[in-house]
Image (cartoon, rainbow, N blue to C red; front, side, top):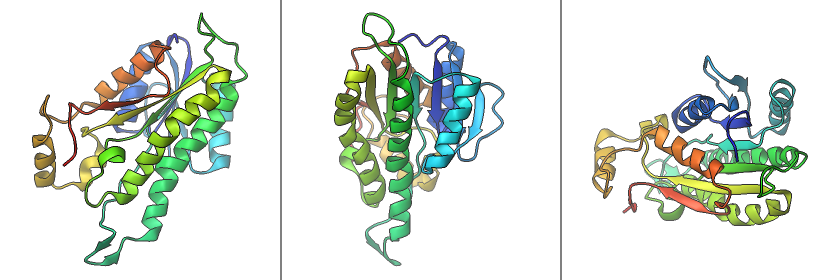
Length: 246
């Protein structure tokens, strides 16, 4: 799909991989809406405060995007939160409220955006020889495949995104809409702020190559290629330097 002049939505766009992805799409000529519950003062793109877990908030944001930019053909879901803790720790059982919140934001919020944007994409004219109407890229995690100690809630949420990728792609295929998931490894983003420097160093030491944290722009570049390449569909792509979490 051609990025230039296409309308694109990026959630979690205030920081990290969301901000980097929005910036790269803007540089590529897309008309970008940056959605975040706590949006920053980005100088480019249409910045909208949106709670992706709330249907009314999301519908209002999409209506604003449609009125000001048009219907999006590209939706990249980067919004997510992380709270670690063992099922049973020193303070007792893991808080059920935390487990629910992580699933609500990471999994249900992603699904909410996917269903509402896909419904709008379906009304667009198909483009090119593939008759494509749109593409949705969701952010999973390698923790959804091999989660570590203390990651039950986060791994469950990201594992859900991985599990829904293929059936979602099959659901939306007749409409000319692709669904792909990117499963990042360790990236230099605010979500890692919960880890101690020692824990982070130990994790980085396990990365085969390159032995460093990922740069958010590297995620953005992969997202850009997925948009450009219509044959990538129903796939979970690891972006982790060969890391397998111990």
